[in-house]
Length: 244
Ligand code: BTN
Figure 1 (tube, rainbow, N blue to C red):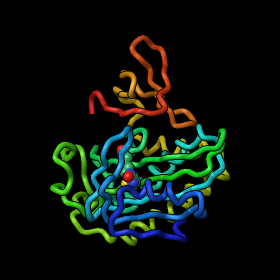
Figure 2 (figure 1 turned 45 degrees about the horizontal axis):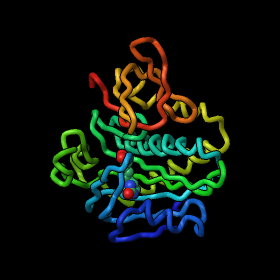
Figure 3 (figure 1 turned 135 degrees about the horizontal axis):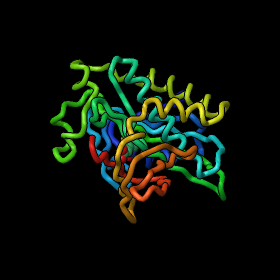
């Protein structure tokens, strides 16, 4: 991954550029920018992307069914969490895609796929990491729940070496993804997840589901056991811990 890199000073969104060029690019191509003016988060939210972060999108062509595309989100979260843990920080994953340190979000992932019938043509995995920003660079509305690597480590981080480590880790995970049963990766993901076992409230565009997070399906859906003991699988949503 990252044999070819498109580097920009400023873009709307690296995911937008990656999607525009994906059809004609080889898998592994990376789009990266210093600043995003129209950075996008999940569920139509804005993703503020000032100088100092890593805002990047990787083009993958795994040839998998569309319903498995969210597995790549889990893989990317795992890769980011592993690299941050190797720096000595206690990173965990909050379903589906937030990497957090001490309960505060440091990275978000936005996976977008294009499919023909049921096979994906390409998947764009967008990864945003708060690296060398100060808390004042983060919008006030989300500041309390956010952090940056610089804040956590108390020093400036070399973004190029971080990126090298991340691409290496992501490639390892992607190779495993292709050759191993997905349950291996799922187990690794579960070990770093702090969601399972917690009382959660998940908001989807249509409703709110409350209960205990008890597991994750091979497609990355969260399994919730509700108060009436019935179970429900949720493929996408915003997850809040009832008792953080
Ligand atoms: C989220 O947690 O809501 C997902 C945030 C994803 C942000 C990254 S930054 C690089 C890529 N380009 C975007 O516009 N979004 C993703």
